[in-house]
Length: 263
Picture 1: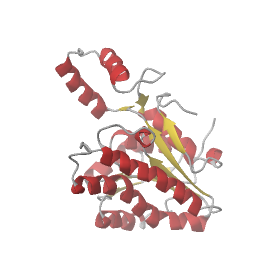
Picture 2: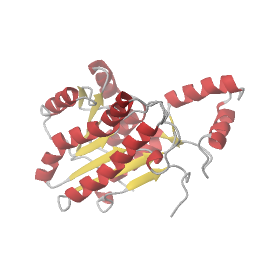
Picture 3: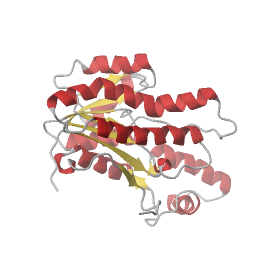
């Protein structure tokens, strides 16, 4: 399948590292003009731009109104408006239902939901004028099957999935599609480092294949017996950004190796 995004401009939030950076590279290879974003620093965004071949780098803490406003102001300097918005940025935080504070609940909502709503408000109007656009939100299979820990994170991601469907309905007839991509565990350097530390404590050994077997058995059982790669998630995003996916709209698409089994 040949996919060309040569006439498109894409912003990927949180694309200075991990899965976001891989998504940025995949969109660039498909022909899109890519804008990378860092929540941490302009230097991190510029480094990612250099690596991915992006046309621009923007910086701002989109979990805050001022930071998101700064990002939107930087986007106004682009030659072409963004017409592919990939809301990749988001983060988890550990807490339990009986210990999570109000501040922790609000923090998760800011980082996983309100940052998306802010970018949508700032970017989607230009898509409406053009009559074409893509909004792709990165969620989690936890919005289908939340775990017993991190209730504030799962609730925020659940709100994101609901918001995506609502936005899809609001944009009916505009040529803009809105979808959520919900991965299970993704094999990233950070995830591997965390599991290697756990393996040392629990005596799993230091061979990654052995560690992976424990992960699949204990934390993420799935018929594929492995984790998703970042490239697999990026490939799905590229497809949803293309004209070939123009009739896929308002969906929460799991990429979980069959971990969640229901029809």
